[in-house]
Length: 191
Image (tube, rainbow, N blue to C red):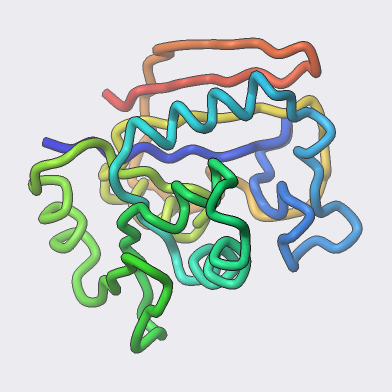
């Protein structure tokens, strides 16, 4: 069965919102992850992208990505992957998705995601999509978290684990990588 892997940048106080400068939210703090990026970290992100053959996106992240990535040159390694990879978009409000290789998921979230996980293929990656991550977390549908922990505290913003749960979740540390900027990549598997 395919694994769903949530990859995100997160602050020490758990904020995942607006890590990039192109994000329209948190205007005073947007782009908070960018000072901690290195070429080595960029290579790791490309490797993570190559380990999956599909992305699972919430509506807001999809709309932000769809407005940006198709306008980037195809020789950019990130743009090429973003534009050519299959994208599944979870939304209750969208009627259609137009970005290349995008498919709309409507209806029962648990049923639809369970079907996706049963299809043949490699991992399914979630980037951003905080509301979607919260929904999948409540239903134990995420198999792994890849957290790029940045040495910064914001004090405001949407937090990664900020929803109601029906009990505690135990995660197993699978890998750690440190970077010269102080960023740490933590990989946790769900048990």
